[in-house]
Length: 379
Ligand code: SF4
Image 1 (tube, rainbow, N blue to C red):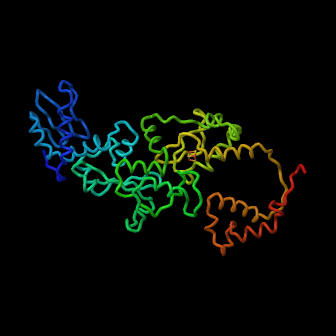
Image 2 (tube, protein in one colour):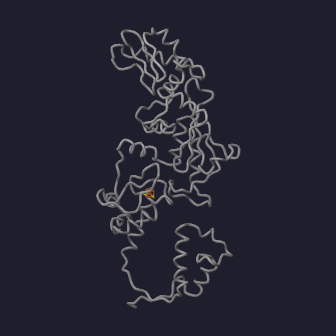
Image 3 (cartoon, helix red, strand yellow):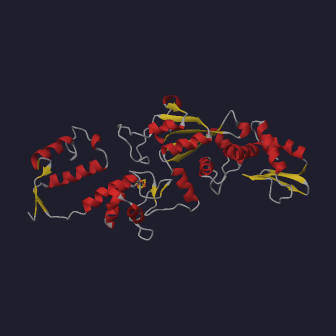
């Protein structure tokens, strides 16, 4: 069996391994340990120790103990997942495994994964860059350390970022965007950068991700197991009461515009999985996000209430006088506001229809007291 360069196993790891091997029911046919390529079983009264690199048969307990250092990465990896992470079947555990690339069919063997963990395995979750490394102080137990930073800060020196270790510090980070405006939608792609959470334990790491993007780990996990309970628009709308009772009156076609306004990737990093109903799908693309959206969120419900009321108004034909350029300018202003780029338009750029001076000129020429000078045909 090939020897792998690694730290010696910690005594706690060795003790836990031997205890597990010894205390498992000796009559049981199933292996004493079967995890990530490490297999320990009893055959004909003797232990068998097997990894993808080779197999030892006919071992007494003392032989088994002596052989552990030859498969140290497999043993410390087993210890980390069974004794430090635990939580078999939980979203937390599945997410941590995904973070080090162990959730796909072409998982790498533990020694290769350990080599990658030395450098750091990087994943992206929304606007978060997640890095998993072997903990230099805890390698004999397979311990990992985790780092979280904004994807835009991927190349920034650690010293240049504000360091955090408490998951709940993230509450403040997610509150406002770069312009100091409140972020009502935590999955909007407006997360500010300039910070790093480093040296996190697995528990604090998951807690930090949950604070930045609430419920995303759980819903991603449900989806992995085909258990995502999607609430489509009509069910969610019909459940609303009080001032939101009107949202189920929103016309079917208007829901396409709602999702285009609020749910596309440029506005929200969740991948929308809900439609009008289970059988009536929306044409607007749900997006490419890593984590799913299982129901219309409160921001969409609140906005839809306004649109439901506005859509109840009758359409009219209006008469107003505009030059062709002025008509085009109205479209340019709407575009600039919808794409949130009005503050990028320079004051001197009077060629842009959404330029402030151009807009002020149009208002002075065509508006009275906040309204366009227009008449409806019925008037
Ligand atoms: S409903 Fe739309 S905006 Fe709200 S979280 Fe889901 S995808 Fe994002």
